[in-house]
Image (cartoon, rainbow, N blue to C red; front, side, top):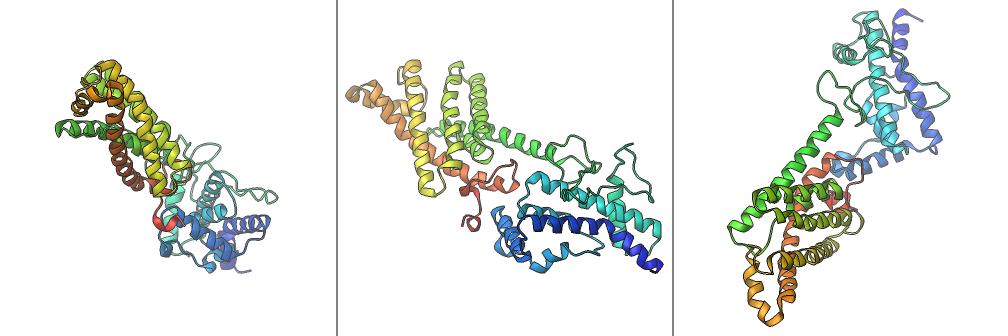
Length: 377
């Protein structure tokens, strides 16, 4: 073997180990064909919001990852292959970290051999080496030093590496040298959505009051958070809205936080377990309107005697109470106003949540109505 062939073999060794372990995983998963793996990856990409054309991947591209003798590897594609073979998100992240560490191993070998490799590959590997630290000392390895990350051949499971990377698990706590971790970015976006949702509720209340509208518009943010993040995030938005409103208006406004909380829970669970189509979504909003009425009407009657809440619907209640009685007037007027309000809030929130859904801020399936139309089939 010539010196050049020996250097090439050493440079591709980390990738050969990955290819061998990935081949073992493919066989253990049922000897899945490369075409089937490509089809599974395409379906997953479409479910996450990619267009059919953008999600497509060639069978030969998938096959190439399993081929020995490679001098570079696509870490993101390896993670997608692991998911297609039945692995979970954590396993995919572990494989991705292993691929990034293997790039660093190759960079160390190339640096020791000399400038025979292409400039682009060397530059990318050198950059990766700057972010990898020794597991024992925490120091940055020298150009000639390698960090072993290959797992025992018998297990077929990728070893984990302390290398910070863009694909690190959301629970990671140490910061990357180039910026915040994925977990930090996710948390920041979630907080921003929650704060914005509370602001949207307060803004809607102010608009309804200023224009004397027969609706409330105080739960659009609650529905948005419940759809995009989950029912308990929506509940937090609803309760926070009423606590802040109580500081601005009157203390009893806090009690109406029960209405916001009930809507959040119903919307959050409803869109995930029931409202998979638009007709069902309309039914969900009707149920939310009814439940909110059953909570709000008694509070209105006990606190304001049915006509002193300060909302424009007070005039309608006063006009009907002589013929229907206070409680019937309260429930009928409140339900009609609530029905219109919840339909407006529900569809407005659905549109907003669909903009946020592709960010995948939570490790859960995206509700069907929040996915792009092509991904619902």
